Length: 192
Image 1: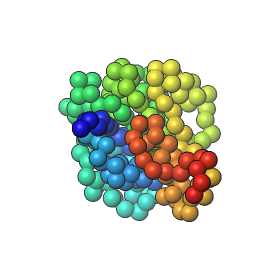
Image 2: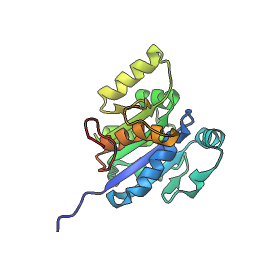
Image 3: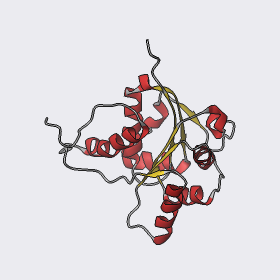
């Protein structure tokens, strides 16, 4: 029997608006755990505050994944030797994006992103701000040239999402596709 590849994933949640995207991502990762060897979560203080404000709960405390302190440089994914193959920052604030683009590793999120880029692994930033300044665009260009993927939280409507979670899932399904995680989701051109 062929051994199936399992992903080692880092998920960082920043204080950008869009906690629903993080919630849907973490729920889907729970549902797809058979494809995941391990998942580590990092949340900023602002991310927790935004989650509570936007979603009205603190369900991030109930995650079945290991949660690391934002300054825990002993977390395994703070080193390339741990071989985490994917990092998703969702939602990704423009401040976090700027620090990554500048090579500033002043917390676990930016250190892990730096590690993923230097090891030529997959970094996906789910950005949510709009409109974008030229500084934002240039930082996105820098990260893209370094091998990162900018995946704006721009939901699609052709699947006719029925609620906010379904709308957020149109973005998260794209993120999971970018990770190489197999899933069932709406595909353009498929008949329902």
